[in-house]
Image (cartoon, rainbow, N blue to C red):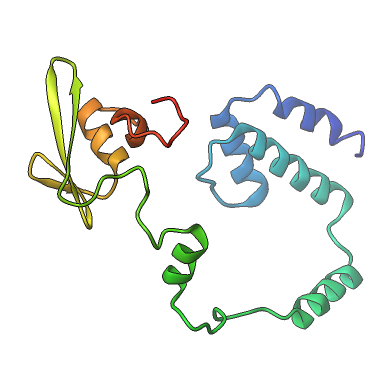
Length: 163
């Protein structure tokens, strides 16, 4: 790094995010929406060095363009026998319901903060207080107000697991 760029790059560490965003706009000629300090410092330091020492040579730019033109880029997904969501669910083993869940129509009950929570297991989700939820975790979040694992909240552990 040239001597005249070194102190300028070192000064970036002492700047606030607002000052870094302003400096980014000065060196790149456009505003940034990010507030990630480390990323801003790296990008500004790179740009300052590129401006001081010069950017890529024309030969390097041509070679990069050649490599990009020769690359086989897939513009559409591969054709398969089943649709992608079905393939994904098959890979994840989601073709069958979780063995921890009781059959549809069953009601799960859990005593929480002085009241009993009743949730109906449905074939397409879970019913709680007249609403349909996609997962037990969504129901647990509605009950507690914070994210928690639905299986643990309703104490539906696998065999050998501690609820």
